Length: 211
Image (cartoon, rainbow, N blue to C red; front, side, top):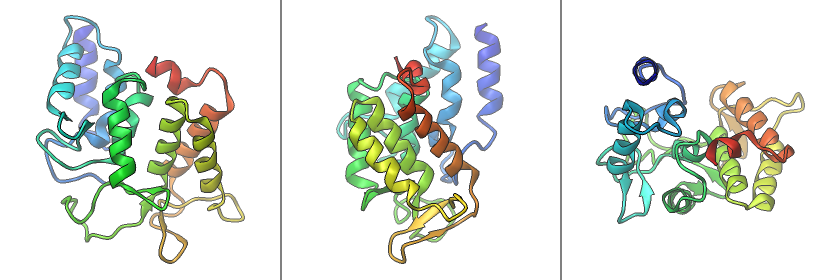
């Protein structure tokens, strides 16, 4: 079992699973969905080794938060997926610290930047808009940490951005108040459906995974 899970993780981590990545080979932000394979880890397995390594090398005690990559001081909004994939419980102090750090440093007028484009090398010019999928992830984080009212308010605000056909883009330009980036964007719609499902059911799937 350990061998098969390790092989699956090794195979999947080479596949793009999220929105644009940084150029750092140590970055694991966009690969966080793959960590669902090893959550919760089984004692004595390769999964446990990977889990322990991520907790040891990606967490910055001085900041009280997980970072974008091993040895990095940058944040990444995909870290909001750590509790929804079940990597750690939403009540874990490291998760709570990560959510708080993202709120302080990556949230602009209620919307979430993927990362600081002025200090992170992703091969693109700085100054991107806020990512809608990341903002839905923040709503999920609020729901998982008991801030249901705040989660619902953010979700309803995001719904107001849809076109008359109910379509969302990749990003939102706060300056010009318009949808920008890839249009339509599947990541945004998948995130919308996930948050709606989490808010609409008592037994939330993300909460089940993070328990």
